[in-house]
Length: 318
Image (tube, rainbow, N blue to C red; front, top):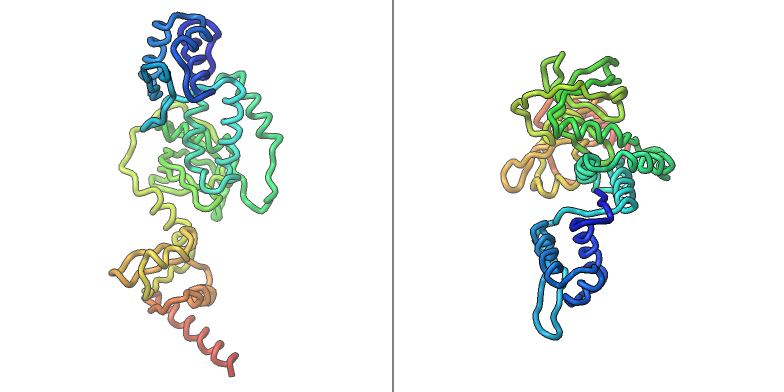
């Protein structure tokens, strides 16, 4: 992450810094700044190209070296202050402070943490602990929990944690497979070793998380996004309603958040919406708010709730 002040590596970093500071440098200018020959400059330019940095070279009186745009991101070289700043920003984004960046931030933070010197981790932690957000209603996920799970997923390492779920609390031993973000809430898809099955876990209900120190052999895992979506929109509820909506899936999916229900195409002009709930009358009301015509597919008790709602609305309109 950080380099010494002597030797070819430090000189290449200095060359990169110079190329980023202005559009074009001549070979003699760079040699003078670096205290080397123009031949050494050419060798260092080749080293940058080998690392993935596209350095363009133009000959002639008006020519020189220029840092171009590449097809892929080269290795990122940061000094101490830049590394701390990036890590702090990634932690904020991972916690939901920056909408839409959560999953990418966790993946990047896991990679950065592998090479971040221990002397800088304390600085990152101190800045993060001194930072807060203005929306206390949003469930904040500890970035340390995210980072530990991201490392375990990447390293196929079993973890242990205490989990407080809707049906009780207890210790879990889990093979972590994927982190899934929905809105500003995070879930873990993992294989529960003691219960011998796939489970989803809300990260804000996890405490005492710790790696167990040994790796597991990956199993054939279900689709993480689909599994978590069904778990949070249906499996946790007493009733699951199914309706056939007279509108394309692409349109209906924009109106139904992933945590609220699943939308499956049923031909080009229709789709099936499935959603869970604890109270059928409330489910009827929410389905009735859809701005499209629909038919109730099940359960039969939902049709009864729809009739009751229709009768109430008819009485209220007279």
